[in-house]
Length: 202
Image (cartoon, one colour):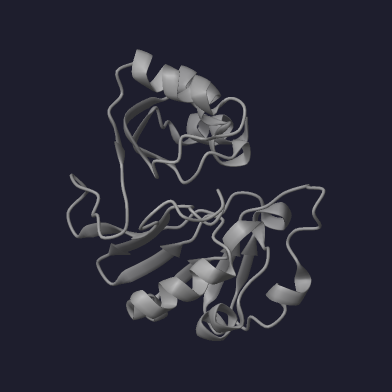
């Protein structure tokens, strides 16, 4: 509902890429309503089809509406993007972990700006990303994984001075966990406290 209101205010009726990072309802559930109001050019998924209730219905609607979708993995780049923008897929390589551990991680660059989107990856995958993709250390903005959940020591050290954001809201898990957020020294943007976080790229 919040997204639909935001799109209405901004007169947005088309989304070029819908990203389903993994098949947990709090990451895909809103798409069923969005499909009724917004045109999607395509979707990208991580290939994990063993989703929570409603995921199959979403995929059925995507197919019924003949919206192209593609499964991506580590090493892939998203095609047909605006000039000077790249989106690289850093994870997963294989679907060997938990549903959260298999979450899609994206590295977005636009001109000189760089953003790391981590979905719900767990400490093991956080460290794996740092080992295989040291360029993420140059990020201007980093999404804290799993709504402010458990972070590895290496992840905290790597991004301690960076601007970070947490996508979260009321939940039964006590997220975000303050003990993981407290070490960060840069600006922390929280959707549970500040509402929408909009990233404006020059």
